[in-house]
Structures are given as structure tokens and as C-alpha cells.
Length: 223
Length: 132
Image (cartoon, rainbow over all chains, first blue to last red; front, top):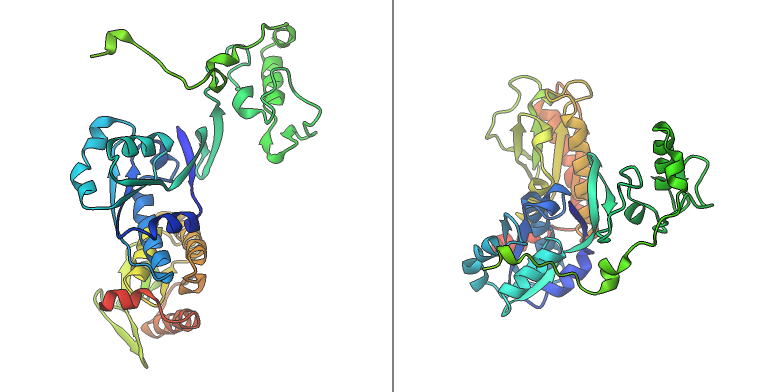
């Protein structure tokens, strides 16, 4: 799922303080799963912002709605009537949702309430960790299902590096596993360590962000 | 406002719609089936609606009908307190106590304690909004 974190309240308040009526729009998909932008979070953030704005002397009316998905036009369309009555939208979806609203409701100010951070998995309740870097050249088949692009601090292709702790954790944070340590252990447990010793072709980074904005076309699906 | 788990109260001690008073303090207790039902948004909405403070009363360890609902309630209250601190409302407006066998007098004492901490932070600015 796509995960993110609330922006600093001060930043959101600063953006909203110049408006009179604001629609706070949640998204019931990824950001709801990571407890940042779903209905529950919209209903939590709204009273918090009303109190913060009031405390600073601003009178802003905030109403809430939660779209099934902010990244699908059909769902984005459903709030058209609600948008007519406000002068700003605060989206707590990922960056894709924010842009979809800004695109469809071009006459209305749209602000992000969330900093989108990564593609992650819920490891356990209350803990989400990055799993995919959307690099465009997946190598999980060679690394025993563990992604060094997203999970190695240096995105190394040939770890572990010298910074791996004796505990098997990464030098940048003792709570983060060294993914190359995990890869090697998994290779050992399968008796296939020699596969990691093979010289591999350089990866095709041009298929990731380095190759410019990604565009995917399926002519058979186009109208 | 007091949100009180029914397992924390002595049986038959408080009615569902009862209001308590202590000097100039008006206490609105709400008996709830389990403190685990208290969401962060409820706590914030109560303060947004003008309450000076909210005290959650949960049952002790091992008494929760959902096993760890009282522990979760404590974590949620802590989270809500941090949010209140971030917007300058003051964490002291919220609190949670774990107890059982409480009488009406005990509930009033807990509410008084919360009111004391809340009022030390000044009046709830949202009260003015509600009275408009």
C-alpha cells in the first residue's frame, strides 16, 4: 500500500487559515489502511484543525467526506456537489489523490494534508515498513523475495555493506534490518549462496524515476 | 465529561442519563460498554463541542470484556493528548484512570481532578464557538 504521514498541523493550519469553507477529503484505500487518511482519520483531523484554527483566531468551517478512492475519476466525481460549496479542499490521500482532486476541481484550492512516503506493508499493528521502491526493474527473483532497492539504506546491489551491525541491523537505525543480511541468510537456508556470487548485468535504472515521468500505455484498453 | 466503562462502576451506581454537580462544576457521565469503544475522534469532538475536559475511566487489567480494550483506550488517550498538545489546547484536558467498584462520589472526585487540570489551562476556546 501507499503510506504517508500527516503534515505538520502548523503547515495545514497556515494553508487553511485564509479560507472560509474547507472540505477535508479522506480516501478509503491505502491511506486508510495505514491509519492516515481514511474516514476515521478525517473525523479525527477535522476537530483538531477546527480547534487549532480557532485557537489562532481563524473562523474556518470544515466539513468532511471520504472517497472510496481518490485516484479514480469515478469516485472523484462523486464529490462535485460538495466542492461547489467550499473554497478549498484539504486532501489526506496520497499525492496521487491530491493531484486527481486538483485536476478535476481546478477552480478550487487543493492542499495536501499528508506527506506520501513510500510503498509499504503493515508488518504488525502500528508498524508499516517500506517494501517497494517502484524502480521499474524488479530483481526480487534474484534476491530471494527481499528488495534491496527499497529496504537497503544505500539501495546496494551487492551488500551487506560494512555498516551492518553485529545484530544484523542497519547502521542508520538499530530498528531496521539489514536487508542484505536477510538475503544472505535466506540464500544460506536454501543452500543457494553461490547465486549471490554471480556477476549480474547492470540494472536498468532508466525505467525508474531516472528515465523521466513514467507513462504506461495499453492500447487495447483505450477508448 | 466522563466516559466510564460499566465494569469500573459499582453496580447500579449511575444512571445512563444522569448529570452530576459539584460546586460550579457540571459533570456529564456517559456509561459505555467498554473503554475500547472510545475513539480519538470522539475525545476531540467532545472538546470541540466545548467541554473543559474529558476523563475516561477504564476497568483494571484483566477485567476487560474484550481482554485488552482498556489498554488500547489508554494508548488512544495518550495519542489524543499528544495531538492536543500539538494544537496548543493542552494535554491536561484529557485523562484516563483505571479503577473498579467506583461509586458516584468517586466519579465526582475524578471529574473534579480533571476539571482542575483543564481549567488551569484556561477556558476551552471552543466554548465561545458553541455559544454563538
